Length: 246
Image (cartoon, one colour):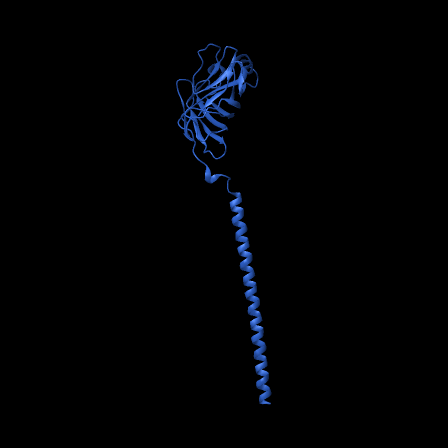
C-alpha cells in the first residue's frame, strides 16, 4: 500500500508539473503576442506621425534677392467702416488681400518664387477717418497721403513653391491715385517711402495695384447708403499693370 501511495504521489506531482509547464507556456505565448501587438501599434503610430508631418517642412529655406511680381494680380482693398461723403469716424480699418505671379527680379531671387499671396491689416487714426475726401482726389492730384498707425499695414506673404519661408511685409503709408483714364491705383507705400520685408527676400517692398474702379464710380459709392467698402485689385486697367517688388 505504501508503494502504491508513493507511486500515486509521484503521478500527481508529474501531472502538476506538466500542468504548471503548460500554464507557463501559455502565459509566455500570451506575453509574446502582447509584445508583438504593442510593437505593431507603435510602428503604426510612428508611420502616422511621419505621414502627418508637413511635406517639405525640413527643406524650407529663406529666399534671397528681390523677386518681381508684376502679373496675375487679383485681390481686394477693404475699408471698415465704409468710406462715405460725410464720414466722421475717428479711425478707419484697412485690409488688403491679394495673390500674384512672379518672374525674374533684381537682384535675382534664389530660390525663384512662381507666385505668392499677401494678407495685411492696419488702422488709420485721423479726424473724419472714413470720409471719402480724406482718401480720393481727381487727376492730376495732389493725392492724399495716408499714414497707418504704429503697427503699419502689416501681414505675411506665402510663397509657391511651398519650400520657401514666408515673408513679413509692412507699409507705413499709402495713396489712392487717379490716372488719366480716371482709374484708381493703390500705391504702397506712398513715394519716397519704402516698405519693409523680413524673412524671405529682405529688405524692401513696393506695390502699385491697379483697380477696376474709376474715381467717378467710387464717388458714387461714397454717397450711396452703403458707402465705399472695397476696391477690387486687377492685373491691369487702362492706366497700366499691377506691379510688386518684394
